[in-house]
Length: 358
Image (cartoon, rainbow, N blue to C red; front, side, top):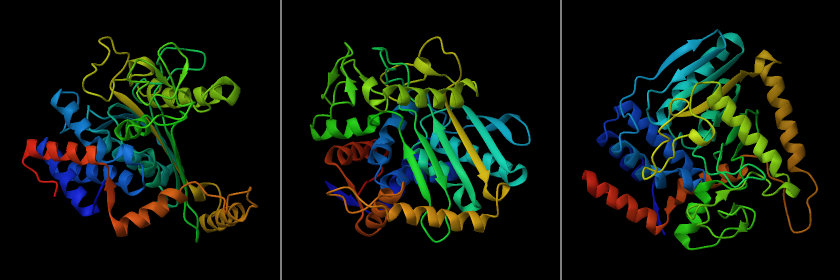
């Protein structure tokens, strides 16, 4: 394990993105989104993914100089075509469209097609906070998840993020996969050589397994809940909603047709849409009630939940966003820790393009 400063990793990531043909603005935006994941402790979606994006670019599956554009719109809605660009760039563009529409119409809703993996969902939802808006961010993803009662991989981890502003208290920021665990967490366990908790994965026969390589070996991730008795049908339903909003609504690929993030797997030769899909929402708080009044009540809501009586062995109740915010403060001071396999991967990537990591 080695620690790196934010600036070290930001500069390295930006320079790599410039090398693959991104504009200065897009390279900066992409690096910011990736590093936000590392700062918030979502290590599976940060710089550890950089070489994955580069491999997709090398395969011609990412357009590093896209013409991102609105293809259909109403006063409060839009469809954005990402032109095969980095999701790290396409998603902020689309979220800005949602925010702009909300500023005029009260709410803004944008569905995206022809994009790629967009990093952490929370980054895009949190863009709304500084505008006194509630932000919503959804995306579909590589089909690695089996619906309840199935052996087939038909859904992605399909995350949901909702960011809600407060006044004196930090914002409420929910950011979660609709599976029991995101695939990135399995990748971290694989790098460490550790097993997975039961309830995360099933093998290729549909039986529970604790192998962190279970998906690589032909198995599947499980919907939130793990099995029917623990509510996996609810996780399945949530993942399905994300898929439909992100892709069926926009014209992107959905279900088993979503292009895989890994470059060694080819997209389905008979796609039903274009690229990966996202969905964004922005709601102006004062479209419902005065913003200061709402934010004061959000403070009250947060304080009441923080003061809840705890169960034995637990000393506090967390508000969604607390762990990430606290880790961000630590990493701003102490740096971002990277596992040795990630450092080796980035070092190799840098050597390919003549860029030093250290």
